[in-house]
Image: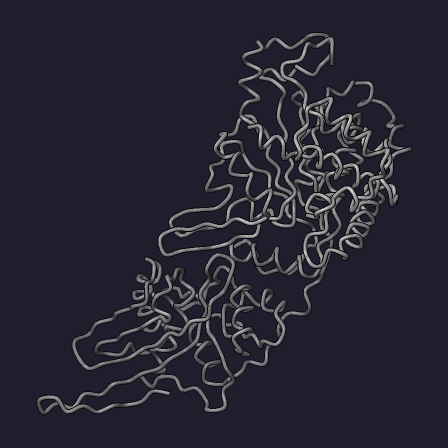
Length: 536
C-alpha cells in the first residue's frame, strides 16, 4: 500500500508515495527472488532505475512509460525512483517490466491490492502498447519463488504450460497490462490453467531408427554399448558410411526421461528461450548436432553475461560433434572438463555461474583427408604427414576419454539393395531400448551401495573398481596382459573394464567374462597412425 510522508522544507509541503512488489531474476539456470521498490517524489519529472541493471533494464523506462500511457493509465508526474534489491547483484533481462509498471501504478494510487492478498510475485516483458510478452527462464524463476514462500504469480499467458509443472503455486496468465492490474486488484478471470501436460514420446526430425542401419553392425553395436553405459563414442570412417545416421539413433536407444530429468531439461530449455508453450511434453532426450565451426563460447557457454552453450543444451541427452577433426583444437580441449565433471563453471566480472553438462558425447570424423584410409585396396592417397596432421586435431588427453572407438568402412551396395535379411535376426529398436533400460537398472541397483551419485558405469567412482565391476582373477590377468601389450594408460585400462561391465549388463550377467574384455579392447585399443593398408 502507498503511504504519504510529510516534510516541511522552506515552507513547502512535499508528498512521498512508495510501493514494493516481488519479482524474480535469473542467473544462469537459477532463479533469485528480488524486490522492486518504487518511490514517487515531488520535483521535476524524472524516471530513475538503480540496482546494477543491464541495458535491457535501463531501456525499460521507455517501455513502461509507454505501456502505462497506452493502457489508459497516467504516468505519475514528479521524480519516479525505482530500485531493484538486492542492489549488489547484477540483473539482466526484461522480465521486470510488468512488476515495475504495477509498482508505479500502486504507488500513484491507480491500483490497489487487497489486504488479504496471498504472497505474490509478477513477471513479464511489456510492449509499447501494453501487451505482456513471455520471458526466458520462467520455470527456474517459478521454482525459486516457490522456495521463497510465494504462492501466487502473475505472468505472461504463454508461460502457463511451464507453470503447470510447479505445484503449490497458483499462476495467472495475463495478456496485457490492464488485465494484470485486474489480477493485482484481486479480480480473477476464472479461466483455468491448461490441463495436465501430456507426456508423449516423440521422435525428433533429426532422429533415426536402428532399422535404417544396414551393413554397419559394428557401429550399431558400439552405439548400443555407449547408450547402455553412457560411454563417450568416437566413430571413424569414410564419408557416407553412416556415421551421422548411427549418431542420430542414439537418443532413441536411451530410456525416456524421468520426472526429475524432465524438470532439469525443461529448466535448460526455458532459460534458453526454447520452452515454447509446452503444449506437449516430450520424453525424448535432447540431441544437439553442432557444426565444426563452433566456438568455445558456443560449445561450453560464455559471453559478457554467461549463457549456456551446447554442452548444457545437451544435458541428459546426446551431444554429437560431426567432422570433429575439422574443429579448432582449442574448442575440443574445452570438452575435457565437462566430460569428467558433468558441470561447467563460468566466471566473469560480477558473474559466477554453474551450468549442468551431463551429456553423452558422440563424435564422428574421417580417418584422413580423403576419408579412404580404412578402406581395403590401398585407395587412400594421403601422405603420412597429412594423416598425422589431420588426426592431431584430437589431442591425446581427449582421445583417451573416448571409451569406445568404432572403425567403420563403406557399406557394400549389395547390402543396401538386398531384402534386408540381416534385420530378421537383429532386435528392433524397441527391444534394444528395453535392453538398455535393463542395463541401466542393473547399474542403478549396483550403485546403491555407494550412496547417492551417478550410477552409469562410465560415471561411477569407487576405490576398488575391479571388485565393484565384478572382475574375477583370471579375467583380471587377461585384461592386464592386453593392457601391457598395447601400453594402455591407467585411464584407458579402467575405461576398458567399464565398457566390459556394460557389455555384461546388456547380457544380464553378474560377472565380466574374457569375451567382454576382448570386445572392449577391440573398441578401446588405439590404432597407430598411419597404418599400412594391408595390415588393416
